[in-house]
Amino acid sequence: MGTAYFPVGGMFDFREGKARTDPVARRLPSLTLSFVMIANTPATFRSSMLEQISQDYVRTARAKGCGSGRCFTPCFQECFTAGDHTVGMDVPALLSGTIVIESIFAWPGMDACSGMRPPSHGYPGADGLG
Figure 1 (tube, rainbow, N blue to C red):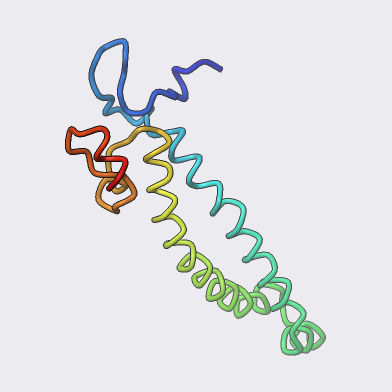
Figure 2: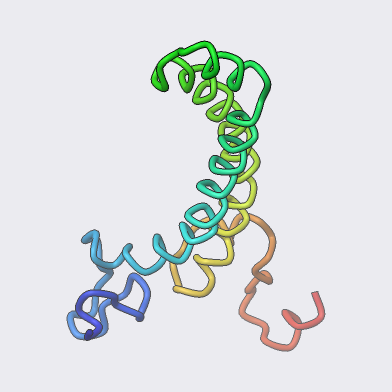
């Protein structure tokens, strides 16, 4: 797999000498940032669903002959409630991860505004002291 599918040079294309605006340049930063949610969210949904299925009201309804579709509807609703909380808690992680991803892949953006980048005034010695 070459660098045409996942360009590693950031948003700047060195061959053409200009910034890339196509979606291909966003693949690697997007995948890197989404791995956190890809791992965390399904695990939370699964554990919440297993917890809901083992509740007494589900076992009672199944024992009385209720169909699986009607029994699992309240379970899905409770499962998505727990999943919404997980996704809501991942938003700050995505926001801080964006700053790291922008600095790794050389994308100008929020890291310049957040104060993580030192000020550049044109004085190399003075910038190290500030």
